[in-house]
Length: 177
Image (cartoon, rainbow, N blue to C red; front, side, top):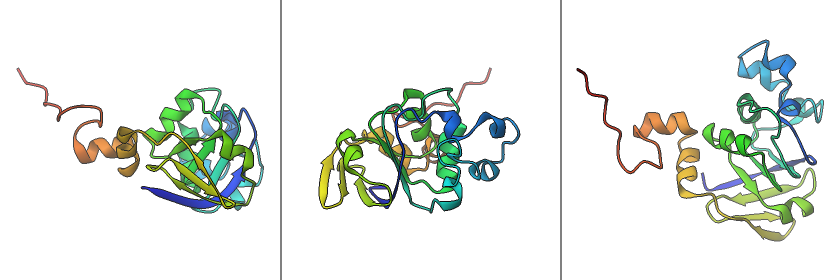
């Protein structure tokens, strides 16, 4: 997972987890395919109908604010969003996204210049965004988070490796007795 290329969906500041997936849906089902039908409904009622696999969300400040709804990044990933770029993210949403394998990029300069519908290319490891003939830089995603993304999320990483990327060695099984 090095480069992501996709069409942009543009949103403003303070997109909360309730706008991403409203509680009225979240509390009725745990079927993520069903929940994905309502992704971003609070910000754009037609988003889930129009979004395509690989599309990218570009937003203002504080994306993912509100409750620590881990379903929010799962629903966005399930509906086909390949990455989210914003001026800033709520910290719990940031970590929940990487845990489910959804990359987030903070690049305020690019956010200001990128337009809805535009195609952008993001180099996660290189720390760059190409859009409209311009290149913007962002702090590259740390190596341990890249490992999580590459494996499809934290749970998948653990299943494949038997340890977390920040651990120095494999975990020992608990001793019986």
